[in-house]
Image (cartoon, rainbow, N blue to C red; front, top):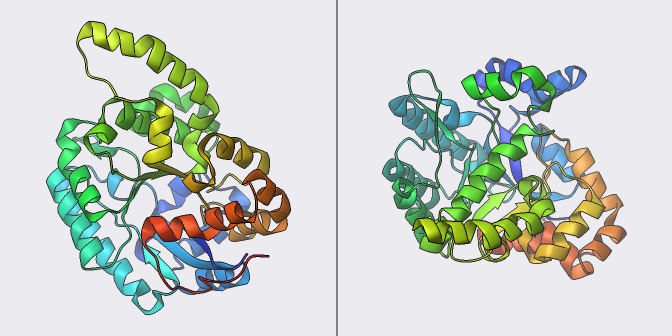
Length: 353
């Protein structure tokens, strides 16, 4: 399929790429590390060459983990976010028919985060923001700031006003949390478990703490076909509706106004990033419909060859899983065009057989 749109595609500032070798080694096989460190720095050369070869027409790039969320000092985080956004805007400027960006934001302060998001969208032409899960704060970085609390309403208000999505992306556990939970089981850090655990906690917090009720037009994206949540939909919903809601009522606490399915079908999109499984895609589609799913790769943690190879080579089975050719086209391209308000880009109107 030509003209695919990919949304969870990482980059790093070249001067900092070698500094992330240790963290990258948590997720990248030793024999693949050099490839990753080269590709994470490639914004417009190798990235576009591989995209051309595999039918990706438009790529939304975002700062890799831990990004600004790993900077514990408020002033330093805000300064770095501003500089990173300016840098990537300059890099992609000659290639806006091929490349877009999500803003990197400091989430130490809700108001400042909203201001930087507004600047990135209105002045730099970005498509929204990508946040690498919780913001680390405090002298030792042991404070985790979650955006499901009322003090972040000012940020969410700006996202709704601008009508842009916010992508909640995983990050590795750090500090005491890592020592207590993962030091003795380090091979579960990253995609095997910790990534999904972190983002699913954060996303379910946004739901149960009423963020989507206060901002019913808010748009949030999560990757990896929903960070395990869809596979536990029935159980989560059963307990929220039949146990937790009565408990909240008895305690006088406020809880989300609707069931979990409502928010996934009205506020949340999931991407195929790093999850190239047709049976799994069908399962998620059966729950949510093809309109809530977006194609993505997760480059360069995953390879474009693998992600696009699955999408193109298993096209007939994927079409069946998504209800036909229209579903295949919508997930591969049209849903993202609508969500991101994209018009013309490379192969944006290429036919699908």
